[in-house]
Structures are given as C-alpha cells and as structure tokens.
Length: 337
Length: 295
Image (tube, rainbow over all chains, first blue to last red):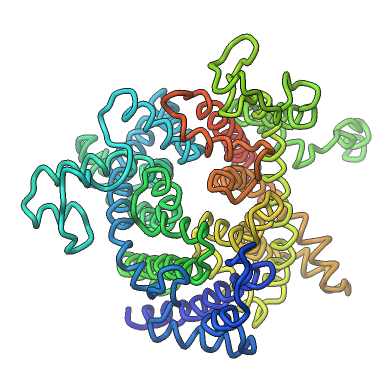
C-alpha cells in the first residue's frame, strides 16, 4: 500500500509542475502588457507602470519569472491581488469555506437522490420507471445550470416566496461572527437557531442548482454499475438461496456496485467547483467562484492566476485521495492488475 | 461435387457485404432518442443558415415603444429591455451557439488528435511529456479553465471559441492516445510496419480510421459541452459581445427582469437546453450504435 501511495504521489508531482507552467503561461496570453490592459484607457504614469511591472515580475527574463513563480508557490505565495493588495491565498482561504459549504450540500443532494434513482432504474430495467428516471437524468445533465438557477428563482422565490434569492444569510436580521467560515456551523456555535434556519433556507436553491449535474451523473453511473453487478453469479446465488429482493439488492449488489459510484462522486468535486462560478454569481454567494468572476471584471490577473491554480490543485489532491481510497478498497488496482 | 455447389450458387458469393458504417447507421435509426437529437440538430443547422430568411424582425433593431412587451402575435416570444424581438435574437443566436460548438470542437480535434497520435505511437519521453500536460489540463475544471483563458485572451466570440477549443483538447489527446496504444499492437499494424510503411503513414492510414468511431461519439458529446460553455461565457460577459445576439448574453440581460419580463429568460434558456439535449441524445445513441459489443 505504501509503495502504491508513493507511486501515485510521484505521478502527481509532474502534474503540479505542468499546472504551474500552465497558469504561468496563461497570464502571458493577455494581449499587450497586463499592466497596460488593467489600466485601460485611463493610462498610467510611466513610473507607476514600471513599479507595477516590477511588482508582477514582468521586468525579469521569462525563465527567471517562472522560477520565481514556482519558488513563491512552494513557499505558499500565490501572488498578491492588484486591487486589494492582499495575498491571494489569504483572500481565497477566507472565501473558500462558503464554496465548500455550498458544494458539500450540492453533492449531498445529488447523492441522496441520485443513488436511489440509479438503483431503482437498474432494478426496474426497461420499464417505464427506468425510462423516466434516465430521461430525467439526461435532462438534468443537459441543463444549463445558470438558466436552471434563474427558473428556480422565478418560481420558488419570486412566485411562491419560499426561499431567499441571494447571499448566505439575511444580514439585516442576523449578525453572526465568522469563526469557521461555515455559516451553518457558525450559527450553531453562536446558538442562534433563527440564523441557522435562515442560513439553511439560503442554501437550498444554490445547492439544488449546483447539485443537478452531479445528480444526473451519479444516477447514470449507479444504474450502469448496478446492472453489471446484478448479473454476477453471487447475486444469482443470493437470489437462489431465497433471500428477499431487498437483501439481495441492498446488501449483496449495492456494496459492490458502489465502488465506481464513490469514485464518480469524488470526481464531481471538480464539477461542483466549476459550477460554483456560475451558481455563486447568480445567487450572489460570497465564495471563490464569485470572487474569480469579480477578479476578471477588475482585471486582477494575479488573483485570477492564483485562484485557478489553487482550485486545480484542490481537484488534483482530491483525485489523488480518491485513487488512494480506491486502491485501499480494491487490491487489484493497488497491485496494478 | 464441391465445385458444382460453388458454381451453382454464385449469388452467395456476390452478396454485398454490409459496411460497418451502414450497420452502425441501421442500429442508430432504431434509437428514437438519437433520431430525435439528429432531427433537432439538422433543424438548428438549417435555422442558423437561413436565419436571414426566416427571422420575422431585425435582431438588433431597437424600439423604445416596444420595450419588454409580452409575447403577442407581432412578437411571438416578446421583446427585450431595448425593444428588440426575442424570437429574432433566438434565431440569430443559433449561429453563435452552433458555430461556437462546432468550431471550438474543430480546434480541440486539430490540436488534440495529432498530439494523441504522437503520444500513443511514439511512447517514451514524448508520451510522458504530453500525458502530464494532459493530466494538468484535465485537473482544471473544464469551465473554470475556459473562463480563465477567455478572460486572459479578452472578451469576444472568437476568443471564447479558442478558449473552449483549447480546454476541450486534452479529452481528444487522451482518447486518441488510449485508442492508438490499443490498436498499435494489432497484427495489421505490425504487418504495415513489416512491409516498410513509414510511421506517419501507419498512423494516418492504418490507425486513425480505427479511432474514428470513438472520436465521433466524443465530438458529438463535446459539442454539447461547448455549447453550454459558450453560453456560460456569454452569460458572464466573456463571449459574444452586444449588440450581436447570443443565447447566453440574452440570459445575462434577462436576469435583471425576471419578475417583469420572464419570457426574456425562458426562451434563450430553452434554446440552449434543447440543443445541448439533442447533441447528448445523439452522442449516447452513437455510442451504443458504434459499440462493438452491440454487434
């Protein structure tokens, strides 16, 4: 197992290096000079422009710029925002709990509905239930989530008045001291039940919107994985022994069918982080997704560059974790068979 | 006796052999979802080409006397905040969405397929180098990388297409590489090598045609993702720029008028959804039809 872990780590390191090169090159795609582009038509005093170029390291030879960039990252320096002059990592860390909270509930929503839907579709293969559920899954998979968000706002918030439209909590009615950054946890720590329910109500729509595509993916993979397992000999044996359908499906089949499902759930973290950009923008959710879009609008390239690298690194680490977990569950993977 | 049998039944010998593409088409025709998808796609392409002929109004003509008018006989889908006809903008928006889908996937293929061929066929250091870059690009969530590239390149439909194309490229590299590695050890490739064919000829003439079925499925599904990505970029202001119509940018302006003019949000979203669904249905159908296990 230790050897497997080392092998996976060794494969991840070049990926990180390539990621750093990718984000380093990306900022060089800016037509002209990032400093001039940021200043736009207003122009800038040449002395100040030189200072900014120096700050961004643009006055150095390109190889030196890359070495400095990698060195900085290895020391936890992901750059400095041109707008707030704050460290990118500090800004990211302050906003990330909001994105984690949203993504966690989105994936929870996707799992709670997606796994039973996939099981039902597999057990009732070829029936109207199967067609309806898989049709719904394909619909969810094809849904532009920003439109889905707008539709839910129109119906649930504007028409029925059931849920709030934006933000994480009602800032006028409740004031919660941020301790962990997770609103639900902070309201519980503060012992403010009203604020807790309010935060939960704020979470419903964005979590549904962000969880829709993972829900569709999880339902589809659960169905195909269950179908594969249901035709195995040991399931037939369990049936022949006279076990109830519930025990056959729930105990014998599901356990084995869930292994690929767990992997796909892990991979949905990337989907959730990408979807968070749109979801957070629509619902004014103060997370890293909204911050990235604001950085684009403010032409804050170092923030954008650092943010992309941080999000991608989290996805790489998540994939590594899934691989290691998968190796721990399934020895055939660990031994390269 | 044997010769007599052979000579007496020449029809069996001359019977035309069904080509793999014909077989796949026959299987595809049986799938209602895929056929629905194909019909919608053909209709959308026709709409994009004939937009000038079928559009009832000019998509960019503003009318301050018809601002945010509900759907009526004169404006079937209503009008937007500048009095422009929503139906006309939807029809012309088809061009932006379809061209973004098709051109960006074209870019992804043009870059990704040769790199995948090289990585899979050459192996060794070149393969490791290309594969690590592919891994790194795949680690960045698709939409985030597309948004970042579009932001760095500057907001325009052309740059959005480049950004989406470059972002979709690693999928084609990985797919082609995997397929090539499987096919390169086949006997007919060995035979082609043994008779002295140069590597490029083996790759292009003997390996590439066998990768095409899987590529076709991937192309269809990637066009669906590219349409959503273009709409997302335009929604965020990084794609098609006003006043040119695009479904994503129409949704962007619609979100400010959800209560007063919901039709502004309903139609562009529905258009994106239907076109993405059509490509996904066709992709799913193609995957089943081209799967060797189904033969």
